[in-house]
Amino acid sequence: MVLFKNISLIASILLMASAIFPCAARDMRINISEEARATVTEQKLSRDIEFLSDSLCAGRATGTRGAMETSAWIAGRFSSLGLRPVGTSFIHGFQVPGSGAGRNVIGLAEGGSSAPEGYILVMASYDGLGIRGGNIYPGADSNGSGVAAMLALAEMISLSRELGRQYRADVIFAGLDAKYQSMAGAASLWKEVSGGALKGPDGRSIGPKNIKLVLNIDQVGSSLAPLKSGRKDYLILLTGGIGRTEIYQANMSKGTELDLSFDYYGSRDFTEVFFRKAGEQKFFAEQGIPAALATSGITMNNNKLTDTIDNLDLPVLKRRIWLLWDWTERVAGIIPGDGKTR
Image (cartoon, rainbow, N blue to C red; front, side, top):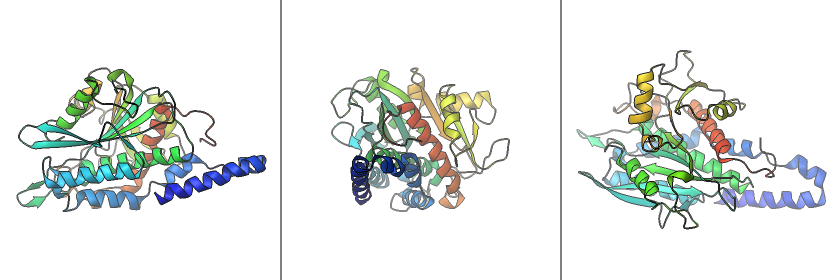
């Protein structure tokens, strides 16, 4: 990418400056976190969600041409960001009873460590309801918003790596198919992980013991179902109790500062349903793997013709992405010595 080439040139100039003028170079260091945050714009998010909601994708129903267009687009984005295929291809096919072939899209951002201390798995389902009664169900929030957030996280991690940041863990990004077919895409991914079929660039299997965190991003674009406080800038994170200290630390970053909830609107039963049964992270959580579901909650627009980008809150979505990225970095573990880290 032209952007990355320019960044590489800037980095080279800074390295030369550090050798000649060490004190001045220290003042010129790039703030990697600020540069990464700046890549997330409302315009980019809008373009991504508009594409996913477009007639070309035709509602993204599993097994349709629209779903194939979507999976190819995600694979292209992964490639452009410098992610590496997990296995021989970004596309991982599987069979869905009654719907033909499903297609998960899986890419990996190498953390930079010569001996990675595991993997973080960030995933978002991309399929939708498709065309029903001659009408295209756009699925802007469900789950165009989640896919856009996942791609934004991938870009932030990739840019941070280009600028010299290194992580102790690698990060896997997965666009999942067939949520509306009993979450067959997530089940297929778990089957690959548990069976040793998912392999990293070094050829080693990515097994359950290697995964430090699974983050499922599902419907994060709305501000129509706020928490008790009534604030529109909120986020629900169902984590099964893990990672709260790091999440609070990430949320303290200037400009993020969201209204957080670790349960589903105060209901223990609904919290358990969405975390243990209705979310795709369940395949991992039920095996004891640290997992989380990020969501802005169900609204009256979900799975309806009114689920369009006009009903989303892109400024708040951007801040939610910042939080999820910051938390991902903390779990991955930033290796010291990469310049100005925070």
